[in-house]
Length: 451
Image (cartoon, rainbow, N blue to C red):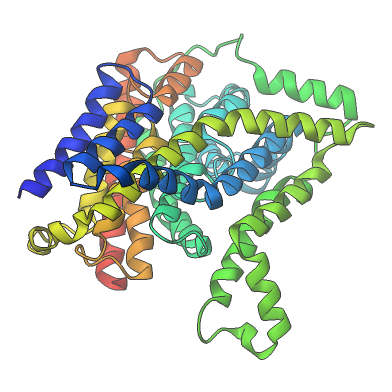
C-alpha cells in the first residue's frame, strides 16, 4: 500500500508542479526522477548515472524516429500535399456527408502531422466547405477536430504513440501498434463525428482573417501552377505505414516471407521504424519543387529540428523517470498489491487521463504514463507483446480525455472556429471525453479477446 501511495504522490508532484507553479515539464520530470530515486532508495552514487542512461537510451533510438516524422509532416504542410490529401478525400467521398468527409480527412492528416498544425492547415478548407454546402460550421469544426485528435494519440509516427510504444518495448514492432491504433482511432473518430451531429443547427461566423490554407494554396498555384499529385502527396505517409506493417508480419515465426530469405531480410530491414521513415522522407523529397530543392529541404529540416526539440527533451526526461523506476525495483515491490487490484488496462488509462486533464498536453501524458507503467506490466498481466500494444492504446485513449482550457489544441479549435468557451466545453471538451471513453471501451473488449 505504501508503494502505491508513493507512486501516486509522484504523479501528484508532476501535476502540481506543472499546473500550479507552471514549471516546464522537462525540468519537472527530471526533478521527479531524482526525487523518485531518493524515495525508493537508489544508491546516491548511482542516481546521476541511472538518470543519464535513461535519457540516452530512449533518445538513442526514438530521437531519430521523432525527428524524421516531424520533418515529413512539415514537408507535407508546406508543399501543399496536405491540401491535396484533403481535396482527394472529398472527391472520393463526395459532398453528401461533409462532416464525415472532413472527419476522415483529419483522421488521415494527423497520422504524420500534429493535430493543432493539421487543424490550422485545414481550417479554411473546412470553412469553405461549410459555406459552399450550407452546413453548420460548428459541426464541421467538431468533426475535423475529433478526426485529427483520434490518430494524433493512437497512431505512430506521431511522437506521443511512438514514445509510449518505445517505452513499453515495442520500438521495433510499430507495425502492430499502427494497425491496432488505426482500428481503435477509427472508432474514436466515428464517436467524435456522431457527437458533431449534435451541432448541425449551430452556425458560427467564419473568420475571414484565418485563411491560411487559401492563401498558401494560391501562393503554391502562382509559384508552381498546381498542387502536388495525390500519389506523391499520400506516398510519404502510406509507404512507411505499409513497410512497418510488413515488418511486423516478417517478425512472426510463420510468415509468408520465410520461403525467400532475401525477401525476408529486406522486409525486416525496411520494416524497422527508422528505415521506414527514411524511405518516407525520401518520398517526401519528391514534393519539393523549384530550382533550389536542396536548400528547400535544408530549410524544412531546420524547421523540423526546432519543432521536434521540445518533444525530444520531454521524451528523454520521461526516459529518466522510467529508468529510475526500473532500477528501484518498484515493479516487484508493487506486485502483490497490483495482482489483487484487477484493474488491468484501466490503470494506464486512468493515469494518462488524469495527467492529460491536469496539464493539457497529450504527448506529455503519454510519455509520462508509459514510463510509469512500464515496470509494472508483468504485475498487471500485460507483459506479452499484445498486452503491451493494448497498453499503448489505453494510454492513448487516456491522452484524449479531456481537452479543455489548459490544452493548446482546445484554443486552436475554439478560436479558429469562433466558439466561445462555454460552447467549446460543450462541443470540443465533451467530444474528447466521448472519444476517450469509446476508445477505452474498444481496448478493454480487445483485451478480453487478445490477452
